[in-house]
Image (cartoon, rainbow, N blue to C red; front, top):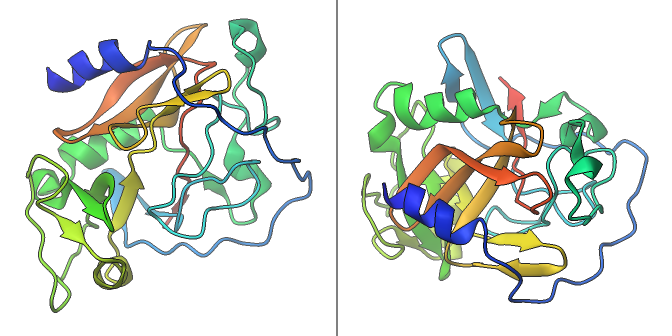
Amino acid sequence: MLAALLTSALWMTGCTKEDPEPEQVQQERQEPVAAKSGVFSVAEDCQVRFAPGNLARGGRTLVAHQYDYGGYFGWGTGNNPGLISTHAEDYCEYNEWGDHFEGHWRTLSRDEWYYLLNTRPNAADKQAPGSIDSIHGFILLPDAWTMPEGCSFSPGATGWETNSYSPSQWKKMEDGGAVFLPAAGYRYGEGVSDAGLSGYYWTSSPENSDQALGLTIHSGGARADDWSYRYYGLSVRLAQNS
C-alpha cells in the first residue's frame, strides 16, 4: 500500500531540478563489463549477476560505483538513450540498452524482478533499504550469502539509516556479492525529482501502448509492478545470465 501511494504521488509529479544536457552518445559497442554481483535467482530456472553500477548518462558506459546515480532514460531507448521527448509516440518500440555492451547484457522483466523480491528462497531476508556514505538506496543480497567480517545487515528494516555503511564497509559487502540500487529519483523532460527519496528502475515489460512497468524503491521497501509513462526518465541496472 505504501508503495502504491508513493507511485501515485511521485511518478506523476513534474520537474523540480534542472538536468544537464545529455552527453554525446557513442555508437560503437563497448568492451565487456565485469559482472560484479553474486548470483540472484530471477526464475526457477534462471539466475543472473548484476552490472557493478547503473547505466551512466549517454547510455554507453556504467557509473564508477554502485551508489552513483547514473543517467535517466525513457523506456526502451537503447538505440537513442539521449531522447528526452515527452511524446508517447516516440517510445513505441523497446530497444535494449544492454545490446550496446559485449556479453549479452539485458534489463530484467517485471516477472523476474517480482521473483527476485518475493519468490526466491528466503527473499524477505535478503533485501532492505539502506545507505552508503549517506546516499540512500536499496540493498539486495545474493542467493548464497556469507556476512563479511565487521559488517551487519538487518533484513526488512525500514528507513535509510538502519543498514548504513561507509564506502570501505560497502566494499566488503560488494565483494561478498551484494547489490545497491541508489534512490536516484526520476526525470521528466529536463528536470529531476525525488533524488534521495525514491528510486525508479525500468523493466523490459510494457504495460500498454503508453506505459511500461518498473521497479520502485523507497525507505519502506521495494515493489516490481508499478507503472510509468514511457517518456519518464528512470534508472537502468543491467544484468547478465549466470
